[in-house]
Length: 367
Image 1 (cartoon, rainbow, N blue to C red):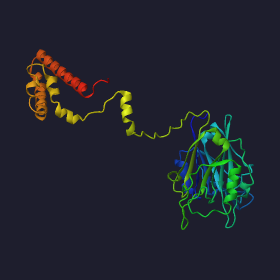
Image 2 (cartoon, rainbow, N blue to C red):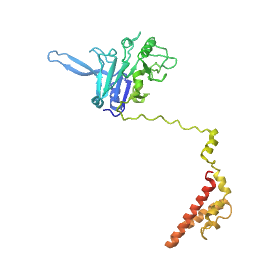
Image 3 (cartoon, rainbow, N blue to C red):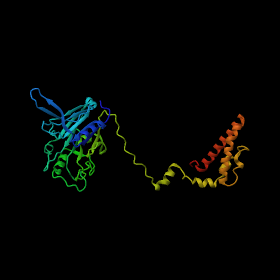
Image 4 (cartoon, helix red, strand yellow):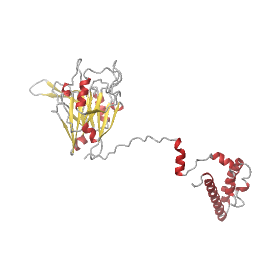
């Protein structure tokens, strides 16, 4: 059972061994689809009958990952590779489909099976020659329309559908676009969103693309596609990130960010009428005009109350009230228990009376 979402990351590592090891060590993805991986000598094979040695080529290794290579001969240089976390490889079935029509040294297909669910992951790198293109094996193949399929790749192709403005379209772009349409693939990239920073005298452009076929779109299990340079650990290509949720996944897609509320001043009166509210008055102005509230609140609370100190204008009344309150707070400490309790009771009663009258004055109950 898979109870968490599976994060799929695709990136061109520009044949860097160091960057590839860094990605394997630091990435939080579950499946890595690499274009232009580091591919070199990893082992020496000796023979007892032949004094010469054979060099064995391979890709970067990490014990946390199961690695996969496309079909290739000893003279080929693999231009794509894939890594699946060992824990995920144990809980699901991952098949490297070496006989698929798309499979070659520069493209591969992974069949991912979990219980009764199945998805295909296609990883493509277009090593275009000086003239023409090298996509013939792709353009002559087909994808199963009934199986949810995600296609990632560095296609090294410019097209008005995804390239930056004023980019010169590639001569084969229309053929590739027609193939995408025939396979029912929907482009996930935002048009014009740069995925390659450029190099030397070459300008930044959109080379790395991601697609979902109609079955994948209908399944509604792929979410959160994004493009990020931060997770490409030094590569000049951006990573393509996509999340897949199995039917048994407990991971919840975060709700969309609230757009907030827009205040409509024209509806102010309607809201007041609906909820029987009155506009809040100018508090400072009302306090200056109604110093009697303090007098009435303290009136009748005892001869030692502050009613004698609150005579006069509003401002001195407030100052005297503070001073009187301070004296009352200190006085009970010097009195006996009985008088102290009575004094504290008068203070509480006085405060409640003031708050009650203020509330009735400024916020009367709805009619």
